[in-house]
Image (cartoon, rainbow, N blue to C red; front, side, top):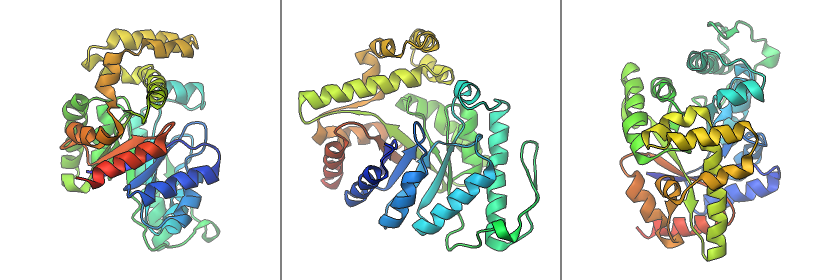
Amino acid sequence: MMLDVAITPSGNLRHDLEAVKRAEQLGFGAVWVSEATHNPFFPLTLAAKETGRILLGTQGALAFPRSPMVTAQIAWDLARQSEGRFVLGLGMQAHTRVEGELSEEWKDPVGRMREYIESLRAIWNTFQTDARLRYRGKYYRFRLMAPFFNPGPITHPAIPVYLAGLNPDISRLAGETCQGLHAPTLHTAAYLHDVVLPAVEAGLQASDRDRSEFALVAPILVISGANEDQRQRAVKTVRERLAFCAAIPECRRIMRQRGWESLAHELIALARKNRWNEMTNAITDEYLAKIAIIAAPADVYSRIREKYDGLADRVCLILHADSIELCEAVAAGRDSQ
């Protein structure tokens, strides 16, 4: 089981670069950059040049608002710059955000994502081989690649694609067409075992691939700290993150499985009224304990192994305040075992 970290871009590229470099120094396997208030690709442009070992990837970068051609070109440049260490992680986001914030139509997202992935690979093949570009689907069609717009071949053209999603259909699509899946932040061990992994396995069987060819990445929220002040800041951050995730309508399947459907309805209602500050108060200690890893810094890695061994191929620490100290403690726990 590989140990990774995830960062949310701060808007300060130098600050983000230092976080990536420190993660590499501590021996983490990958850094995944999420898309929220800032573009996830920007920090990786510097990191690709100034690191030499660690995998660099996006975690749920928005697919549909970007043309596959635009995404293909960005990924190609990062694969070239990183010498094959870039992983393209794509996501659909919740339909409320896609329609309400991004002004995109929410229609057949799984079918559209399948074509998106097929389009990427058709475009990358043309970049690498100069073969005539011909892709025709229901949602995407590509038939022209002038030499002026073709960036040409690279040393590592087989760019891995990971999906990020909440429902079993996306997990199955990832197993069938991709190299990995980012599990939802809002998950339990039972949800991974009972819902996500069976769907991935069905996709792998459909494409006649082995489980060893696929990586399930589990993002982990951690409540820890060297003192009570740090611990309370972590509690606040994790409560806020979970309240936001649980208010996404697509998360109701996970909430229902744990008997938390009434909480989901409460949070969704508060979010619709823009009462964001009230949502964190609805997250109980019981809920925190089921989702987050809660332990002293020296014990975090052991708790991760207890929960995720046999479930996830990679576990990913979601960084927040006091994250450097936490990363150092988790890395020390890993190295001692």
